[in-house]
Length: 269
Image (cartoon, rainbow, N blue to C red; front, side, top):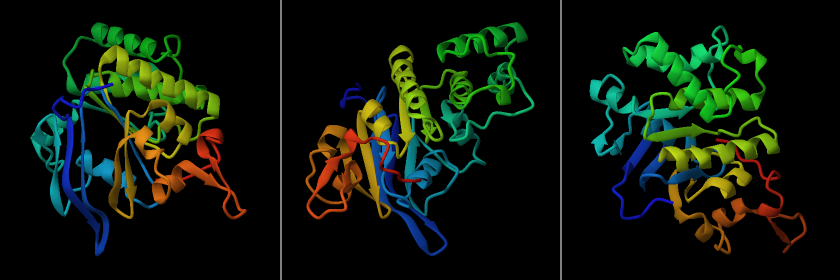
């Protein structure tokens, strides 16, 4: 787990984001240190996906600022911002693989677009990344020939092919069965250890949160209601954070821990 004394690799400073007249994020701040796995969570409509898009420069805040690697993120037309984002891997919720390309060709795309490496070296790097995610034999397959879990792993290999120091994951376990989702969680933990990367995850899956999170940011009505260790959040005795981590029975006064029923609580981004 990352040291709190490390300089932040991601900083969000007093960010407010609006869609028209509606405020979606209100004065949100957070910081993520190297090698940390930070999870953004909260109830539906709280601004999780909006926050991720803002960090990645896909949305421009009405006020406040976002910093990656100590440099402020501007709009996507900025060459400096584009250079920053090349150092960030992104695992999209649906994988976003191109159906007409093989797994090998999908993973090779960032190398072909952003480097001048010879084809033989590109192929070697691609196969290394596929091996790292457990897909060493899948290179010639098309995305339609893969299971849901394999597609997520192929997309993860593509996200890591440029050796980014930070990985952003949008609902990585979405659509996966519990066993496959648990395997993906274990892979993220293994990659953090072996590659020394920082991982920022947006998810509503309680089993994944409990498996991977060092620290969490709990968003509620556009603001940060809790930021800190997962263990501290689970000690809260009432309020929205408590409700999120607890499954309330219909009978008054009865509750059961959500960790005992990790797939019964459903929230959406």
